[in-house]
Image (tube, rainbow, N blue to C red; front, side, top):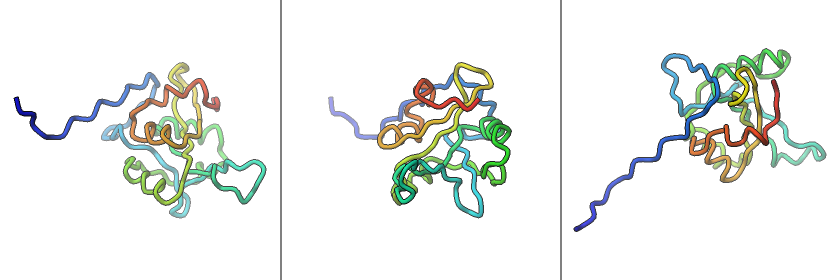
Length: 147
């Protein structure tokens, strides 16, 4: 039997156990990104060398529910003054191609209804999380608890 060539359907993204509360018309592949004056809000990952920006990257949020809780928790943050936009992973990939190595994911805690977690991911972990091939629930144990 001759095999037909064609595109295989991508596997479904793993479902998250978190309480996301997506609004109507929300595309579950999108990430919510805060912008100030047209630039994404950046988490500065350099503790010792102010000139080393290899661990700096944008803060991206799993859903509006996470964004509201973050702004409530940090009312003086840049994110509190930001305009928010849903961004598709393909658009975020252009940032990686332009030299961004780490994204800081702020996401709903899968184990605590109103919990909020954050983790910086790079490399293949970043790609898998960004494209929802791996649920952020996977990283909950290593993430920083914000709330």
